[in-house]
Amino acid sequence: MPPLRYHEGQITVQQEAKTVQIAERLAHWVGPIAEFAKISDLFLFSTAGSDRNLEFTVLSGKPPLMKTAGGSEIRLRFSSDRAPRISLPLPCGGLAISFDQARRVRVNGLLQTNGTDVELVGVETFTLCRKYIAPSVALEDLPHRGPTGRESIALEDSWLAGLLAKSESAFLASVSPDGNPDVAYRGGPPGFIKLDTAGSRISWIEYVGDGVFKSAGNVRATGRMTLLLPDFESGDGVELIGQGEYTNQRTDRRVDPLVQHRESFPTQGVMSCSISRAVRLKGLLHPRRRIEKALKITSRSTVDDQAPQ
Image 1: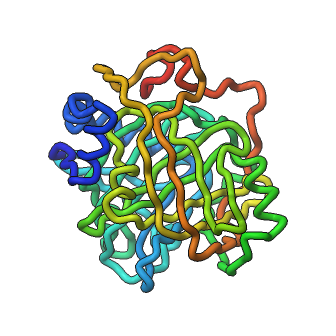
Image 2 (image 1 turned 90 degrees about the horizontal axis):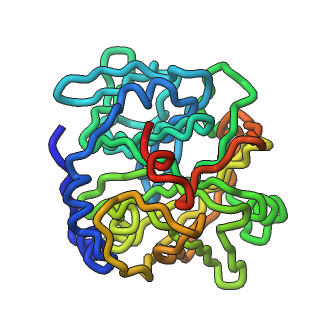
């Protein structure tokens, strides 16, 4: 797999945060892609719809949800009843995640048909750290592809307000200047995402990560983004679609991608989005139960605990 190539938006944010050297090293990081993908019980696809807005399809169920092939390239193969119902081939951002093991892997590339199956051929593939993931387990095992329905909702909707107040997990879809989608996990304390209904705007603190700024750089370059908030209690979710902005705030130089901090959630910057549309996703995924006794790994955890394992 060739090293990651950063575009101008990502390089600019890396320079602001003084993480250029870290990003250059991580451009060559891949990690155990197939191993992490096989144990994931949730897989998120992000593709651009006919209106160019980024939309999510989510596959949930007992792992493995896919077949994997390695070699010089990573291929994730899904049966046709588990893949997005879209015209192929199409650029796709993919994220496989195991909430109970705090493992996640990015697989971005081309979604295409292969016989009766659909496969995601990886162009950018890498495992990520274990930080900020709220441990949970699915309440059902059978494979499920969602959403089963989409409907626009008002930002003043009481269900949305309740979801924002309790949410510890979200997923950010962004797109590069070349039109390649990407999916990233975002986690924090309950209610870490704030909604200004009068201004039709959401915002949240971007906590210290690995220093690559893949999503923040995409947003800086193109502005296009969709934030997915899953409702683990009901299995529904909401897409908040709009134009995003990222402002970096932390500029202390560091030499390692993972650092132990005194704070659990140290601020790196602020992400905000002017919302053009909110969509409730019916039947998005299997309902999940929070593992209350499991500790969330944060920036206060040891570096060994934060690292992929």
